[in-house]
Length: 471
Image (cartoon, rainbow, N blue to C red; front, side):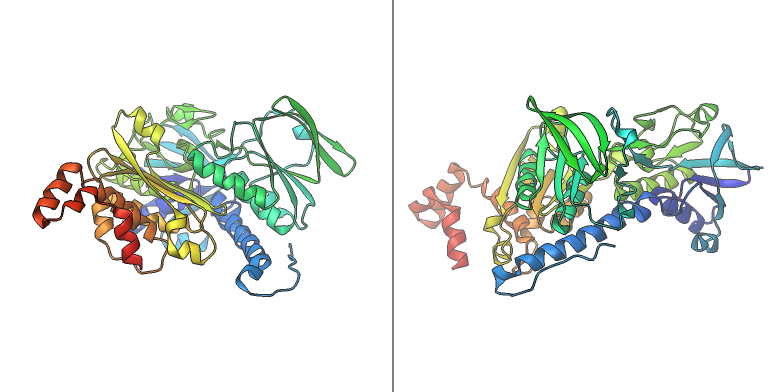
């Protein structure tokens, strides 16, 4: 008889959610963790990074308070397991290794299982830069160990995390340089959104080098230097600290995956199907170890799907869920659903409706009119395929679009929804109203002109009506 209904390897977000959910359903569960409970998100990722960003934003807001008539002085910065056992989960601290298709070991203990979920997460990837291992660099896991503010900081990697932390340290007072090998920062995001973030970083004093190739890293006394080439120009960048934020690598080593019959790749991670099932039908995977979308909320979603499919009839599919992510720069960049390249790869005919935040009263009142909303819909319908929002609280605001998509509601539903005034979410209503107006084709306008006996409707101008409503 198998000892456990479910064994979960890894106590990060995906692992903790999996173990807790299965235990609450009455399954006998074992949870294995080799290092720290909580994983990347709690210890070195989302939680500490957002606390750092909140402190940096407070410092920036204090410096700008004069724009609103508020006078302040100089701003300085002071830089400095039991629960799961109560749920009935057997917690094993140590390294797990598969010794059969239905069993693994932790130390001297052998744990047979009916089903298993691999949720071992990922770790920071370090680029192959000559000399990088000879300098004391920080990663997105270790940067929070700093007990002093570096006067000069180089950030290798201009993705979401690199931009977030680069902004935070610039606001604390560091001279920050971001080095990105791609032609632009945030290459997975909307191009217009990335440009707004780049402009914002430059206003904060961050130097951004896109299309930058780092040739070597070295130490000279207390200082560190990077030899880089950008647009054919060679440069030596001298800093006091280096932060590597160039993506993450899945943790698949030393698990005995070959013994378990689990196909995997050192870069891509564990191979899973739409049910999160591996090549061994007894074993599922969740979170960073099996997806390129390495976000905490994705790991949480994966865990719920994996538990359901592992313990019951497997029918829950990853593709049926709406994907979202947010980069917490200032302004934030939030994305839900498909991006235009993804829509085009699927051969879907679509159209895009957009609005600048400068048309939103709340954004203007708060002095933050930079940003926009783009919503992509299937042509001729109000079905939302995806959306991008750039705004100060974009992640919170775009949640309404994610809910609408998950519920099968379209832009018409958003247009009918009464939103409080003045709020930033008004930009959603504006875009929904714009989509509705496309129905006013020349033919419809002629019909309305006949109905009302008012020929001027044939030259209907929605902007006049909107401006009249505001006045």
